[in-house]
Image (tube, rainbow, N blue to C red; front, side):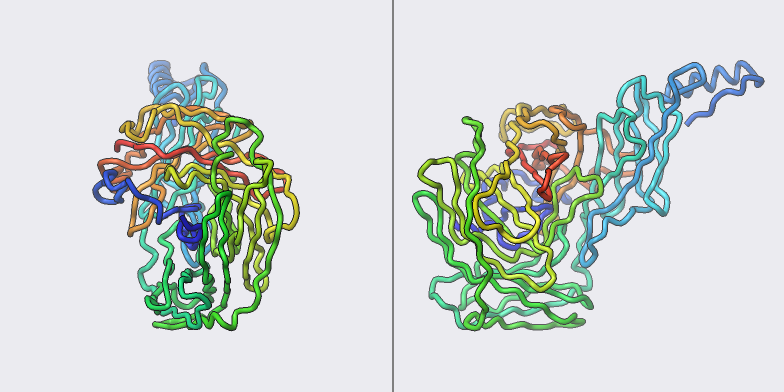
Length: 482
């Protein structure tokens, strides 16, 4: 099974989507974008009966009154995940926001031009709260278990629209292959969380092929000629990467890559230790890796990082004789001025359950022994297996093995032929259970989620990654009954 065959130039909401290994899921079909795809305080001098009535109404809504808990506030900022060619987490005006109040009840609001909605007179002594938002062409986002310790929280709405409207065709060809059995992969350096258009496993006979590109913006086309050989203790993957900057195009364009004239790639040789926990499933996993142009971190640093522009990969990976160390070699090519982020990834690729753990290092792949550690992947307890159809709003439970990690449930479906996040629900740091709230009343849940079945997974983000850009791990996937 080839490394590039499964991951090269696949832009997911992080993601890191393994399109080529997503088999066995056809039964998770859903319609219309599923998985295929506050009250006022009474005036002390006013009418007593009116005041009593207002207090009762406020109490019903879970809002603090004069003789209740200390009034609290919550400001909610709603932003959208980036859409090409932008890299910005732009505020979402007109988003519907629902607050499930401490002690019960619900109030709703709409975000202003700055993407904000404000709630006041909240009685945080009555319990925890949850906030959910949604908007047109966007998925849903929730934060649960809020206790009033954060005066402002941020919700990130995934993009569910089709960014291809108005895009133009870019024909890509390659010549002078160095080996008859080589593959050719190629893609554009675009913002993630959208359909990622790429050429995958092409051969000299199947080229040229066409990419779609946004018009009027500078483009970078990057890829590689590559081969793959499995070894008893790893793999070897001869890789000749390239990176070429293109002028903006307003109509159909073309590019030809001469593989015979590619400059020698940058390289690195090093190693890293496998997780120390004896029963860690990561110890038996396969090492993957990427050299990205950059990764985008959400404003609250709670969600899976979003990658953009793959510029390189490991060319060799083997387990050392001690069984505790992975030894690696890398090759990459990057445009001048690229910041670069290197991702080391341990992944259960053979089981095709999407379970993996990744560390994100600033800069190009490093030489020598590395001392970073991986987050353990969470073990989902409820639902018990992918065969169980778990109702969307029933509690999900998991076991976590690291401290200082924030969990998020990702409910995933398919839009425009690409896996996307439909709803992301984030719980407090250290939580091991959560339930999905109801959507805001102004949001038609079926238009966002579809009907039938979807995929779910639990992702963990390290609150403090230290010198790293980020640390992320995710559970096996499970089936969500919409």
